[in-house]
Length: 73
Image 1 (cartoon, rainbow, N blue to C red):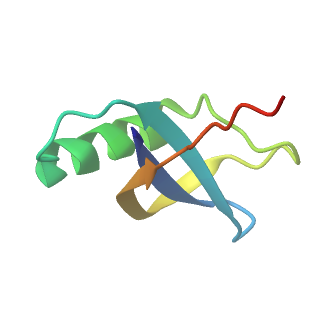
Image 2 (cartoon, helix red, strand yellow):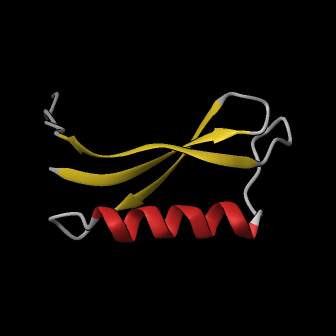
């Protein structure tokens, strides 16, 4: 079972973008997540493929993924 913290941003062109962090510390400290997201926006170092920068916070969530492998012979 893999978990990731997904940080969701609004871009300067009004679209959505996200960053994922594997194996987040739980429970998630929402104040720390908000401060980190604000720092990411202020640093202005991440851009979408279209060249738009991150301009606002949309949200954050923990995503859990279950994978079941089957051996096929």
